[in-house]
Length: 220
Image (cartoon, rainbow, N blue to C red; front, side, top):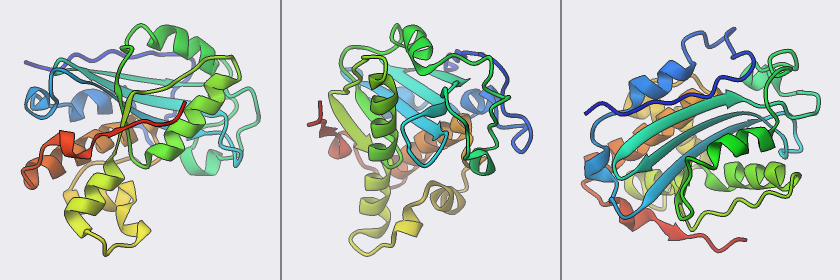
């Protein structure tokens, strides 16, 4: 059964350096193995964010995939960070691109209907994405707190390298090169699709259960 795909289309999409890295990435990289990998008693929310500047507290793009009862849905939108974007040289997003995009609270008003009360937050280097998301939502008094976490960096380190590894070997683009996964790096839609595929390829290749890598979230 083909995975369902939903998209949020606010404002202009990035289309200069990553013309093929749009909502289509979410749809093409989803597969039908979800019911085999993801236990039905847990909900998974994959998140990748792009930020506006070095403060890392304002989001300018979000890619999100939810897996509930083996059913997968993907979401992507630009976000108006309400500040000047200085990281355009990294992700290609400019102030003009986000001029008509929602702020993070507007995005959350839509997304909260698709996120269950209890869920596993999944990201590649989860501390970054979760911290930025909590900070930006916190500006509007919105609390975002998963019940559990799963970091695909942990999975790669444990299965591919053990204790001997350098941080560069665990970067998403490096892993995608090794695993032959298509990636348009620093495009949130492509990054989150690739993160999900990295997880699934590693679990399948090493015949491991996803529950081994889920940890309780102890933040607030």
